[in-house]
Image (tube, rainbow, N blue to C red; front, side, top):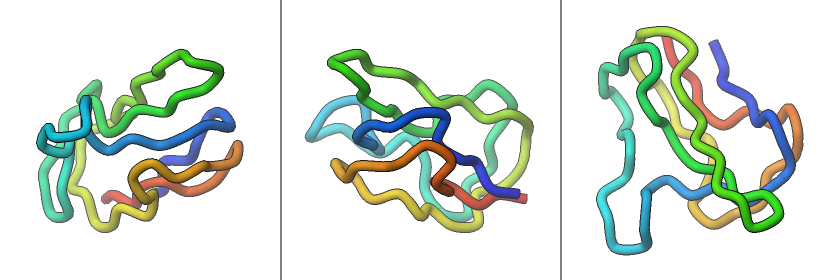
Length: 76
C-alpha cells in the first residue's frame, strides 16, 4: 500500500520549517489525515490519507523534489 505523488513538486513533511512532522513511522492514521505537503508552482497541496492504517515507511525526504507517481509513503 503505497501513497504516490499526484504531481511533480517539492515535498514538505511538516507545515513549516521548525514545526513537528505531520506523521512518523509506526503512527496510526485515519482517512483524511494530512500526511505531507507538496509544493507545485508556489501552491501548497496537502496530501491526505486515502484510508485508515499505520505508517510503515516514509520514503519521501523533506524539501526534496518528487515526480508524478513516485512512492512517498508505505502504509498498511
